[in-house]
Image 1 (tube, helix red, strand yellow):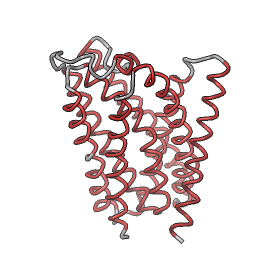
Image 2: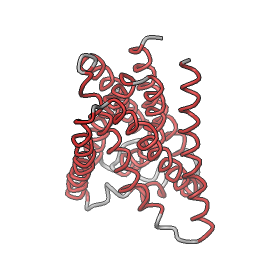
Image 3: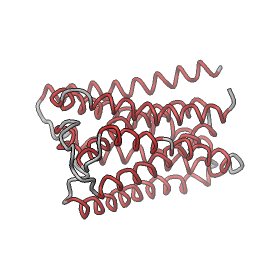
Image 4: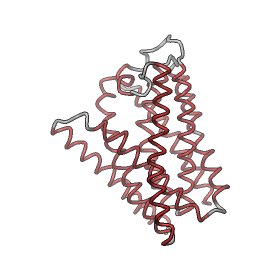
Length: 273
């Protein structure tokens, strides 16, 4: 397969499969969803951190010259601050749209797919669609940047993106339902927004293929995205549960995410030989 084919395949699979998985998840009984969602968050935490520290950053620094190292470190810091700022702006827009409920997914996920049937569509639903499309577009750029650096890294990065996209898509579905969208309409809009990942991948392929020198910086931005999501969004959610049994299970699932991404790296390396 050509490099472009790999980018198209993995950007499409990552986006579409995460939407389908989230849609199937919302068909489960509310009590079952409430139990399973924290497990997915634990797993995604391990996958994202391993993708950042075990894949993206080693490749970024390995591709760079010695005089680029300070700039790459600064890029990681700037990326984390950028994602913090963007999330603040998104929360602010949501809070003005519907009394700060748009960003809290837990309450929506508990409510069930049909709970908001007949409710007039609210502005936060459109904010979610636009925001999710932009997020998916950036994911596509980062996946393509990883493939342009190394095909094995591209596969691992795609898997890490999918791991965190599934819990996010569950939250997006729930917010759309809360905003008055029907289940079919919420699924359609989420599916369409997932193809922004492919658009981002294509743009990056044709735009960055000739700009090899900037690839390490894109990898650092991708790593900062993974680190920020894991540390700022996912881990605080896990800290809400403090009993010993749940905490031990969280650690096991985080390690399972680490093991999957590490195993994927070895599998991708063997496949590309």
